Length: 296
Length: 232
Image 1: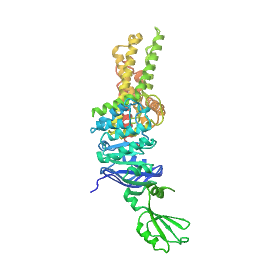
Image 2 (image 1 turned 90 degrees about the vertical axis):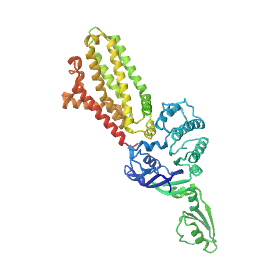
Image 3 (image 1 turned 90 degrees about the horizontal axis):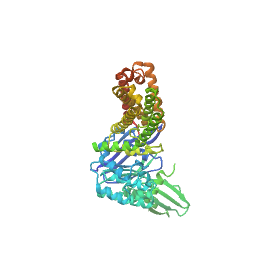
Image 4 (image 1 turned 180 degrees about the vertical axis):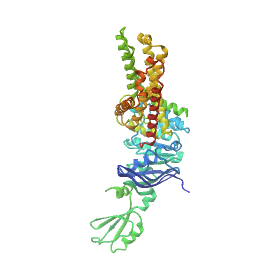
């Protein structure tokens, strides 16, 4: 049986009459790296705040480790199993790196000194420097250090690479991708950078206007979603394509079909038309994303 | 558990140490001016009432927002962002507010006791006009009184952004005092520093002290309740 670490069913949150999360369904398996995608304002950060109990859900349910998230007074035991990196990467500006580590450590009995030393070195964090004097990249590294060193079973990262330079981003991604194997950590992260998600995630969900529009294993999605290029000898006749043709675009004699499923049937249908050549192409995560949420 | 509380104590101390320093600075200035200008006919009330007012307004600045990160000196935007880091820690919001209040009340007590000792030692008029027992009663009454404005500030810090919270806490607490004065004069807490003062009555003003403590408790419970139910 699959161990589900994060689960939402019909999760809702409304701000001043506007639904920020509108019946969201998610399921994150243990040990996976789950990329949570969406445009600005799609509801990613609100979902994360709901999962962490910072917000009260307006409907539906959210469960972490099989237990219902109990709103703002959520249990300390559950939070002890979670590492969180906020989008803003704000920590206490008046503390030094050493002080914030010393401050955080007693909250987590399972604190790992070896991981603390490793991440201090990897992110080149000067222990005596004040947090207010750290770069955003260093703050992201420090937050990751604090989140990982307490042996979190689940890492919830809200735009962890936002504003970071490519070198730091690469280091951070490399460290993240190693965690499920080395520590058994489940990673749930929201992101804008689709290339980064494609680089490390094994599962993704794309949300739009607070709802899940695509969800699944990245490898399965790449098989499931394909683009067909159908070239007609003359102008294409009107065709009623079988189920699975999400978007159909015509350019001269060529028809481009974005298929969300049922690719074989579509190829068969196109191939049965006289004089037509059909070529299926794999699609990138970016194409899947743009086809679903790229326009209004 | 003690290690967690110790860390929260340190966090809250780091957030308010400069404000406490500022209060001490203001007190030193006030005492120095009065010491320099003291005359033989000086009334003890001319010294103690302004001192009491400085302490009352001073403690309004010592309240943190419970779980809100308070800036050490200024009021820069965005500091509340680290609140998410705080509330993601495996500790209850009740404990966060309680430790915040404990630190603030310890700071309040320290500044009050030091101000009282300074007044006793620097001004012969205080020693001549009062007995040590009456002065100790005034000190105790002041400490209990100060829990009210402190908890008012704590409550409004949880609700509002700085610096307005301090102003509104001050106004709200003044309104509460005005209401007490008009509706229930018997427990008018300001009378503890007027006609019911231990300097006059030579006893502790128990009804006023009980009212101060009750108001402070109600404000504290309200602050906790807000932090526990609030969305961040």
